[in-house]
Image (cartoon, rainbow, N blue to C red; front, side, top):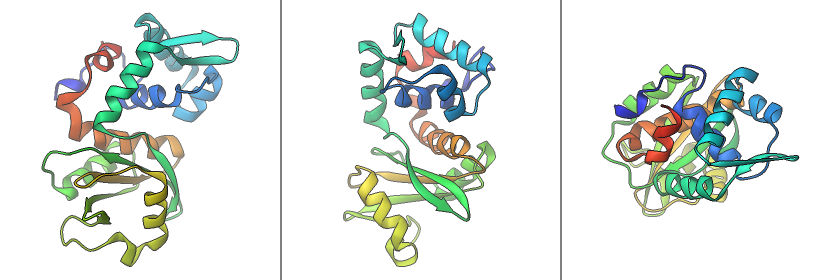
Length: 200
């Protein structure tokens, strides 16, 4: 897919997406590096790129999105939501997001995609009749994992037909980026041009 290209090996499209959502609030460079589990050099490169494209402002309190950056996040949000921490699964930190009107997919392929990326495991669910269910047999998540079902309902805004991605990994950054990776895999053909510019 075309979104995978990029001359900057220091950070990935998943890092860029995660950073954009995080920078809705002012964040210092060191804190951002920790949240994304990236080295100082990679963070500097990423921030320089975002600044060069007029997507962020830098101030005493840290870096945050400018008007153009906020518009980009708005556009990204049309395709998928920001990740939310949903506690721990199998002892690992887990994050979830909703993908709006996804194309057809095989949940096993997407799960494997998440694991190939950084995840220890992933669940691909769908919203049917207002309920989060397993796509293969329509079984409600609530039957097997009621606490997770409650968390998803309280933390995510989802709509009929959305896909819900839950990924867990060794650390929060890997879990967060694995969930974004699946969302990007589903929405790769409709990613905003401004996002692709960050990777060039």
